[in-house]
Image (cartoon, rainbow, N blue to C red; front, side):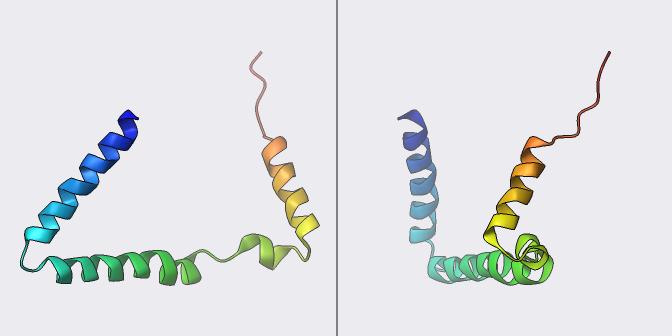
Length: 78
């Protein structure tokens, strides 16, 4: 409950601040455009789909992920 209250207070802080500004709507548009560029466009160019390009089936992809998660390379500390 405490975290929900904190998130709500943070959201209301920014919401009220932008609502009372005369350029608030333009500022939100700029923020959303920047977020779109960061998450949509940059993902396409800099973060290719490794699993889809290196494996043909879902089974191969899942086996690779399971192997990577379970076969951690740890060193023995004797």
